Amino acid sequence: MSARIRNVLAREVINEKGLPTVEVDVQLDDGSFGRATAPGGTSRGIHEPVDLKDGDKSYFNGLGVNKAIHNVNTEIRALLVGRHVEAQEEIDRAMIALDGTPNRCRLGGNAIIATSMAATKAAASSRRVPLCEQMGGGCEIPLAFIYMMFAGPAYVGGDVCDFQEFALIALSAKSYREGYLATLGIYRRLTELLAKRAGQPSPRNKDVAGSSVGRFDSNEEALATLTRFIEEEGFTPGKDFGFYLDIAASQLYDGKHYHLQADKQTLTPPQMIDRLEDLCRKYPIVSMEDCLYEEDWDGWKTLTDRLGKKVQIVGDDLFVTNTAMLAKGAKMGAANALVIKPNQVGTLTETYEAIALAKKLGYGTIISPRSGELWDPYIPHLCVGQNLGQGKLAGAHSRGESNLNEFSRIIDHLGGRAVYRGREVLARFL
Image 1: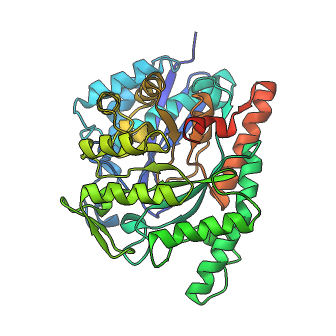
Image 2 (image 1 turned 120 degrees about the vertical axis):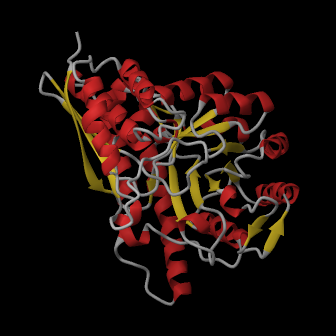
Image 3 (image 1 turned 135 degrees about the vertical axis):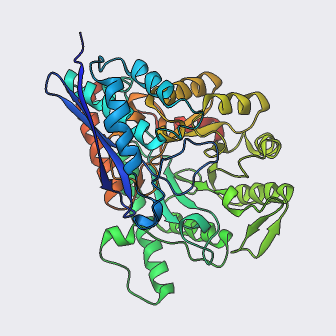
């Protein structure tokens, strides 16, 4: 018989953006407890659950979360105290029913997801097992993925590259660690180039360097430069490394056209598809995320028909980790992979359902944190526990090292059960 929930307690903490978010402790009658914070996110899909904010402009310009905290400490606490902590689905379904809205706007998506994750952590603590065992018991270490730079209107502003994220996937590495380390030389060349362009020394503090902003004269120049750096490090583009691009196209779309400021181009949806296809022909792009506006289902189908056998076409804002949206996309033939973000759908139970459906449909699965959230080991553990195979988990900075270190701990726990498939994960596109 599993331990029962003795108390649920929420508080305000400050995330990496310097903004308040909800932190929840779930305490058990056997003395165990779990703690989790609600992720945030800069690029938010229109179909995601609503984070409940206070709206008081005198406190963090309206972004306070005291209402959500109050809901955890009153209604959610009363709902969950006395329940078996192992009954994760029962806990999550009860919170969904208590909220009673389609977008979690009454209690707050931030209140519910933090409580859901804290309950799972408490259950793992009570069982005395690593979190990956509680989150599915898988054993697959993901393909090494390393951020190179960030850009785009949502993250940085207008006078930089238009695409939101540029990352490298280490295709030929024999382990996650090997792939991470092989990428650092390429990253060092990039930071030195960007520092030279800015007329200042390359930062010695790796946390500063790890936030590289892609200031190039065009999106294609950025891709060409990264391709050259791969070669200068002694690797072969397309064989040893491939590109992962997050286009974040909804941020570029005005309802009729896509505006690529760096390229000085205004493109219709068909022209945007042509542009992306041209880039994939010229550069070793193996994955593209949020390639088109999130409501342009017909465009996504066209793009997938044209590129889906050669490139992993990833839906983030398109699917928002939601089974109904994913089923619609699969029926239409839109995309062939989805990003997994628990707070996009609202609870861990719903996250597991989206993962199961994706695997059944043959869609790739890529775990991702949200921008600004506090580092939390649940991300690598969820990735391994659910055998996702891919994760947007590492920049060339402290957070990347934290995930690398956590994978080392997980590998030690798994021992001979640990599996690293490497390029096999993307074999159908290579």
